Image (cartoon, rainbow, N blue to C red; front, side, top):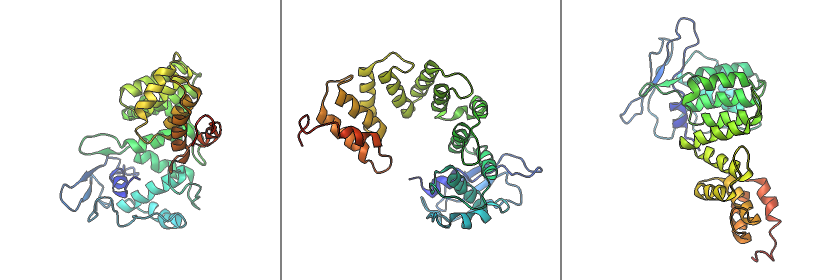
Length: 297
């Protein structure tokens, strides 16, 4: 998973919410062994350093206890700005959106409060290159597109965000494709969705390549090209892609785009069905259709 060091580096600068200090803050990580974290341009009331953590290990939050996370973090998140408050806010945002402690509810946490924290964090920039903190911007886009507990989807806000500074996100074209595909903020447009996926694939996004292959396989916004889709899936299959493994298995089972091979289909479907992180339930069902007669054990 993502180390806590990665998380804190992505969060250690925050635009101060007071009217007197809206200057953009940025994070600098010292090159020496203590990995000192410094908030550049920080107001005087903001704790500006956290010293003495090693790679992958933040002493304050090196383990997550979902049973007590709200009671521990909510008071810290509501304190005056500090590194600890920033980390607490980030973790509570992840609980709110279901990325941390799925199903957990934080008593007293207000959706609009969490959304406000996320909006602030999405404005951060790294001092060394001026780039935005893309992960937080992606998370905000997902809230705009899909909604979150207590917050309705806001397609128009998502469109405005994608047209603005969020355009630097590597996942931009995935979001645009989804919105065209679902008709969010406009009419359903399968061709425009496929075009967005092509842009994402050209930019090197592997998820866009996988979705583009599926569009070719199914003829969704693109001419049907099952052989081309199979070739794309095969190139992507070396990664951890349960959904791609499932598509490969189904094409091999049915002989679409490739000669039917029930035994090869079973191998891909078993991988997809048994993956520890994100198994594909449909792959389990598909396995029952491959008989011992077609592929003896």
